[in-house]
Image 1 (spheres, rainbow, N blue to C red):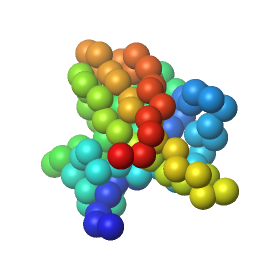
Image 2: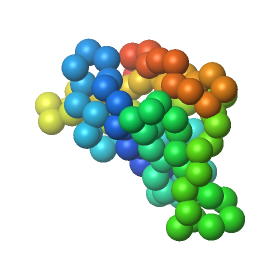
Image 3: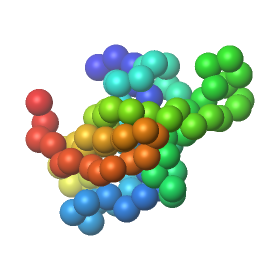
Length: 95
């Protein structure tokens, strides 16, 4: 299975998916750290020089995150950012 990072989602997700589910991603450092899509639609990450400090990643691009719901249904999204701002989510099927 391997290592991953946690994804906290503070914005509303499509299709009524609960944003409090324990999402994971393998698109970052994969060291069991946490990243957050905050209420303003910004990606907040640990500072690479001081992990006790958080910073805005100013993300331009996308990453995939996923989880399973209480009924063991796979849930996967692609979050896309432009110049640091979340522009949307795309629901994806399991690869």
